[in-house]
Length: 117
Length: 115
Image (cartoon, rainbow over all chains, first blue to last red; front, top):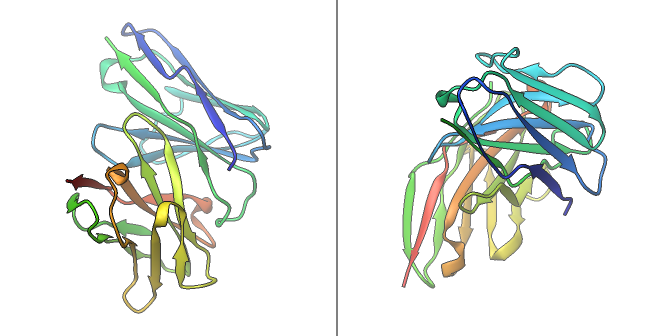
């Protein structure tokens, strides 16, 4: 299957700083990328959907000014957690899909563990 | 609106025993259904998916699932559990129309395989 990478895999930062997470589709063009957040022993919660070249669509309750998403190319999307606080500590997972159809598989990255001190 | 219910947050089976992980969905339109597996500190890997073709879907690692519209279910099974099957399993639904083609996940089932 297609490969999606995330960088970094783990990051620790101080409260108030910003952190950028990259999501790359390595061997296919991702027209749509998704960002999820997963708390320990919980399910994935969709944060936002981004289509290449357009603004991301955020889920209800997700602050778009805090979680900045950029999908500048068909192989790269970034999530920037601005002014991070301890409650932002979580496992962030991205996924990428090559087409618009619902049945097109989303390929998931390995996740990024964010710890805010 | 679409939703997924996974009954049993933890399932424990003996090695070699049948694995049955339950998933019920709610969707206003015909759904696409997926099962994913997640190992600790890793992303999700697709096990199988239902896309309105055959109702019995075979996936990787010996898993299969049957779509039952009358029961709104998509339970995951494997005839014989292996130690390597121990992981978190997520059922997900995606509607054919609307919902922005998003996946909605269930709360997950942690599978434990004992000797």
